[in-house]
Image (cartoon, rainbow, N blue to C red):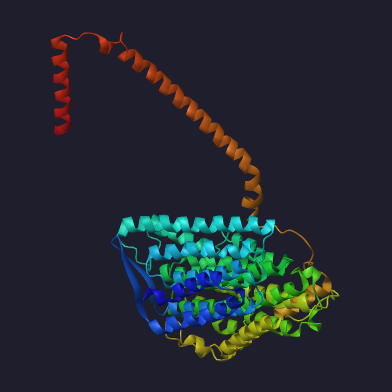
Length: 562
């Protein structure tokens, strides 16, 4: 049965893509997600594909109310990414896309920590090739940094599960809680992939460095899989409320001043993850429903925004806001889809972000987390400013860059239109998404107060943007390098590394010298003791030999007694 599970179907397809002629590869990318989704629906709720290895029960396919929505949206995202990348003839990207999606599905459906670890590392190995596939020195360096951080997360997960097994005798992946060193290590491993504050820079570093289509794929899986693992293992862990609140607002400043629009979207993605982490930390049914719903919506509208910026980059060769503007004249379909994605992330009524984000904000208010509520509202305004307004304005309107590129290829347009339609459909018919959430939903997003409050935020954010632009206070979109916490390991650590290596080498040499000197002295004394002229070479009398034997026997007796 395991051979027919969705993760294995994707992995088999990735191997198949590497073996067939180029003309068959793109169709396989489109067919595989449907086969994966059919597998999820065919198996249905329950625990499947259980394998016993050396006394450990490995659960490869656990479908329940929490994993099911993630599995569905991952299959949808894989299909949309495959359609968007129809023109790609790079077998490395095609194999990596299917392998990466399959590994992410495997992580979501893993029923034990050992299986989770296997897929956890598989996502790192498969996804990095979407960065390497750009084949530039910068992409190679970024890919290595990304891989080191992702593998570090896996090492922490492995150490944590070993300690957890030692403490409890179980590897079941359920609610863990912060109760031991092992669960803390697992928590940090999840936090790295979820881009917790100061562990987040791999995201802004790696995603913009990937290929145009690779960035769309990357945006859908790793971080959402991490959100799922937090919801599975640490629901109701209060510290997540505060971590998520910081995530939601921490990256706002960087997104506002950033010139590279793909990096803006990466920072924005980090902020949106903060909403989900807050929902996990609150841990109520309403909050967890909001987390899953927002993860589902975020996969769609973030993919849509990355698609539109990618289409612009595909036609113009740049994603720098300072080099764009006025593209609405020749890229109207891309512009409209970008506006739909922008309004979705800003939680505009009748779009997907509105019906998911409000669940988490209301849950924070009902549980009395008023600081978190304020942080999420502020982050909502920030999302309007740095993504919903900034990206469409500087890309398609604003100053006229003079560029007149052709519209995106038809398959890119189709992928964007389908994704935009899903964002609208979910917003207009929220019951469709609410029906597959972990808990029954008794919630009405379209109340008068919800709509009015959100429209006020939208209007005031728009007025603030217009005012700042008119008086010249809005940060100029110019070419620059913005320093973030990754400066520590990208620059400072690189500068300090030679000195650290030299110091470690010096200590190592000194330790070896001391050890060798001690060994030489010991050998000298031993040779003096055992040499022909030494003590052992003397002729011992019978009395001395008997005394030695008696002493040894007494010693052995003492050891046995005590």
